Image 1 (tube, rainbow, N blue to C red):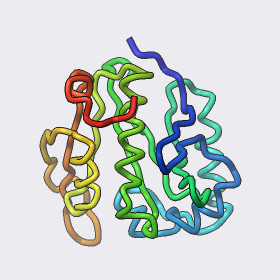
Image 2: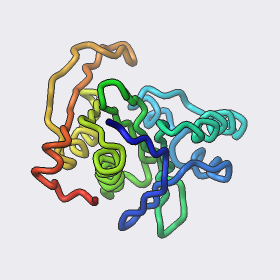
Image 3: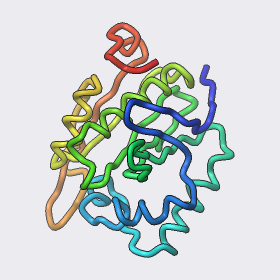
Length: 192
């Protein structure tokens, strides 16, 4: 049985994961939502104006009243900048699983922030919500994301070949998952 608790604040060593706020619009524009490369890697449109970001924030913020909605702003503690986002964007309450998506702005990549945020919400998903399984996917061309997924202890399940059509070529989609029993058995260095 799942216990939906909504998007609560999670603090890690270097990050604060919290609900989005309207004041995040400038750092979102500066750090990732206007970056075509970042957005295309997780199949999201580019938002290039404050008005477009405001509409996106309306969608995010307007969903926080649902107990099964989980989307966090990733805020770097030392700068206070909103440097990306992470979510259980697919929640299947009937089958007790969720799927993670994340993005970190280019300037903040290769610092372990995506791994830190992902480990934090994995623990949240298993310990607070009681998911049976958490899954995550990435494009075959996204080697940095694949490294994050492996560092977090996910098990590779398979590849959907030619799943995406991007820039004139077909790209595969890699699937990974973790079961609650694996999380508990291996402890995986994840915060509880």
